[in-house]
Image (cartoon, rainbow, N blue to C red; front, side, top):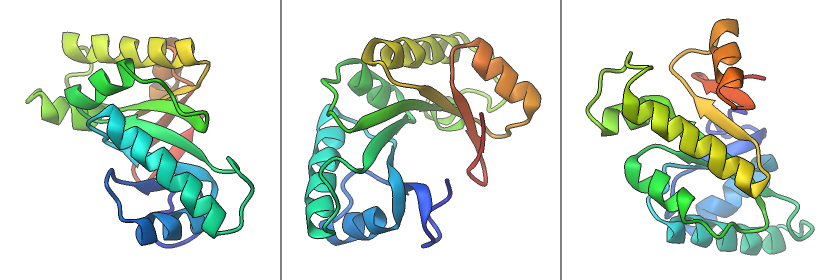
Length: 166
């Protein structure tokens, strides 16, 4: 999944508001699509989806051949995902647990903190309502982490250095 090192990847991470040339370069490296990290508004998601469509055309790729996964990292991004009228190219919704804990000023090890439990449930429910897989970024991703995430309704766990445990 890596992709932020300039090498090809299944999903290439991009921040909201990335310029057209940089987004096109990211799309050129992506096999499946882009991972939009920490959008704050529905407009961030919509603009990225629209820019991805333009990048596909400029790269001579088939329409909607690249998907867009969204990784929420704060309360504002979570609120945006819950209001989302999803673009057709949306392929997954995720929660960046360490980023959310930091944004809320909570202990990084507070896995059972009520706001985090609620946020996890909201992401899983939003993804299910849209017919999409839900994934979670954690600080670590071992077999026990993956099992706990699956039990909570997530399809996959992401952890540095962007290793996916399905």
